Length: 204
Image: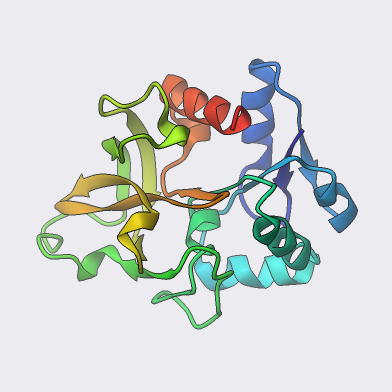
C-alpha cells in the first residue's frame, strides 16, 4: 500500500488519482499511525524549502518518515520540493533538511550558461537516467518529464545520482540512495512517462 504524505504541501490528490487509474492502492497519510501502515511512501512538495520543512515538522510526520527511511525496508520517493528536502540543506533557506541523501540544494542561477535562460525552469525536458536505475525501467531512451523549479540537487556523492537533465548545462534531476529516491520533475503531470515511473516505484 502506497502512502502519500499529506502534510499540507503538494498535490496529494494527483498521485492518488494516478494510482487509482492504474488500480494500485494508495491513500493520503495524515497521521503517524496512517504513515506507519504504508509499505511505500511518496513525499510530495511545492514551494520553498524552509516552508516545506516547517510544515513537515509541524505535522508530526517527520520522525516516522525518517524511521521508515532508515529502516531500509520502505521505499520512499520525494517529488519536487519533496525531493529537495531529502538533502542536508538548501541555498534557498536556513532550515536543515532530512539528510537522507547527502548533498545540498542550489539555485539554477549558479550554473554556468544559465544567465540567458528563463527562470524558473518550466516545461517538458528529456531526462537521461543512470544505467540500471529501477525507477526508470522501460524508460531508458530519453523519457520526457514536466519540470517547474529554480533549484537543483547537488549530490555529495556521484553514486547517489539517478538521472540528469540539461537546461543550459547538465545537472542532477533524480537521486537514489538505498531505499530513498527523489525526482525533481513532476511524474504526476508527465502523462505516460510519469505513469510508468510511478508504476515502477509501486513495483519496487
